[in-house]
Length: 335
Image 1 (cartoon, rainbow, N blue to C red):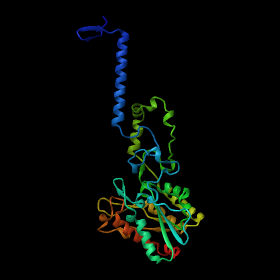
Image 2: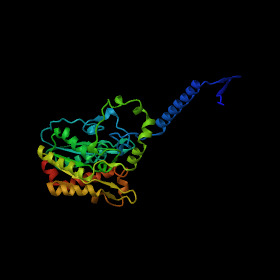
Image 3: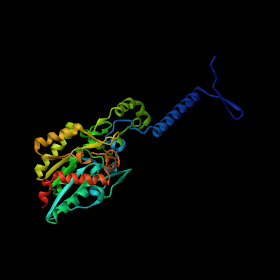
Image 4: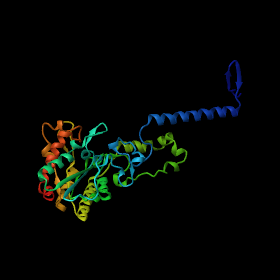
């Protein structure tokens, strides 16, 4: 005997036909999928498919399309600290460009930037100007950009910065090189086309579908993220800068990257990257500056905002150390 499906509405009972039962089941399934889709969209904040431009330095958040740059991945934030420079170098001027990441740019934490006068770039400029005694103007451009790696720095130098006619470039990269991205190394990154989303079918637009399909792939990627720029690629990027400097007839020096150890507030060396700079220095006879001796000491904690960004006091010491170690290479051209 077949069971009857009935439901009560008000004080009347109704019996569902097979077609009615199918519709009720179908609507229940659709409603369940809609609710599940909403839950995934609200509760799951990590990417659900392989995507470009997912960097640790931005908490793996996607770079907004309005910031895209096809070569640099994203445009420099507050380029040159908001100061405008003529591309043609003024007469009787020794021009230096400092390229690097947020350390050079002057990150103050919590989304803020240090004022120009508190950066090591500005302080180095003042030291050189005082040394010159007015014989030749010294001008230093701060081309640091938060999150940049050596690959981005190399491309930035070739794409734009050399056109500002530098006499000397100071390159400080490595921290972001050693950090992570979710799915691609820097050399594999691409700026996604705006039409990619438009080409997706209905299923590919569903967060629930992507969650079920790619869960283990994404979970593995998040558990084992890729180093953005492995040491060998770091060497190639720095070597590329050296060769480009020779081609365009300017000098280039490199600063050894490091972090601060949170345990005892000592210098934490990025050995594999430092070793590549040592090889580069021996191969091309280019200057490499190590700041460790100048910064190491009991007061290191007072010199940094966090584990990599110096405060004004730290930048004062860094500027003095760079000035001292560069010595004749930096000052001869400015006399």
